Image 1 (cartoon, rainbow, N blue to C red):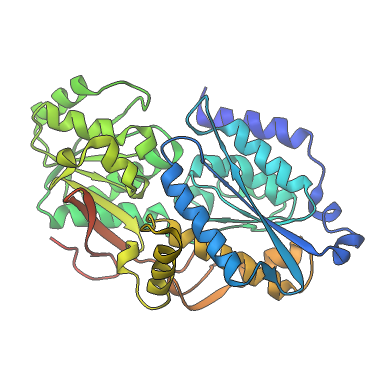
Image 2: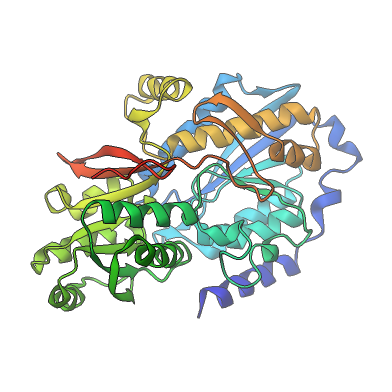
Length: 412
């Protein structure tokens, strides 16, 4: 079954039983409500747990900083899992159920999620019909927001009411794929073999990278989709070895077997270096591959900068996180924190328990000197932040190399 068919089937089943909640959930009694719920829908089962725990920690910090209040409303936060034990990763049926549950709960004013771009496709139209603001701390697939840069019908198919209710605080893949190709060329890469996990995010960013690679002067020797559930990829890597590329680019995530790709690349004697996107910017990737495999040959692009490179308010967040949790935050922790701050600020500015007013307030967000700097949302719900970074694995940890894009020469 194709992703498109799966998306249509699940959304059809859920929407068939869904009322038009945009008005019913903001009924006359909403002004009397004293509790505002913020829920998050993230994969809490499986290898993404460490990353999403860091995101949830960031959300809780933002709420606690306001002592659990947003104006006159008391904030109730619920941490929902959109993964299943059966899959060990996000599950379309679970994500659909979460979105439907949030839409029907009149107390819910903001939905923070999703982590995976494919999951967003499921929940976006459900929440759009409910006039419920959705803020993602991690989705980067371009078609969720950018007309003409995704599949036919995107992003309008996710906005059945024609109102933008989906927002993301991370830069999208049209930026990441391009700066990745430019960085590869600056690193001396002249040839590349491109792989992807056939998923929405992985294939999407590999498509952007592939188009940008030729323009950057990196010649593609081949392109192939992998089975992310395969046990190993030795025969594929042996085939790629015969072409002797300077780089292998993998569009995918830790959960779609990036670690095994890295291990098999090394085991067959490929001299190529490996470049991966932000879906692998987590400790779980290093653990899955083994730091000795990635040492000196793994290059990772990421939206923004790593936590230890944040300055000003961002550094303050990292310091408070370390003090509270006695651990370093993962890369997306600050985005969970910022998503929650956006939600809380919007609820305060809305002034009452009203989904439509909260959604509008989210759209009008203008963050000044926040944890990610100064930014706002554009008309499509995208952040105006365009900062990207390049990172390598060194000494078993991610090490910042330099900023990517923005007119500056890529680090070498």
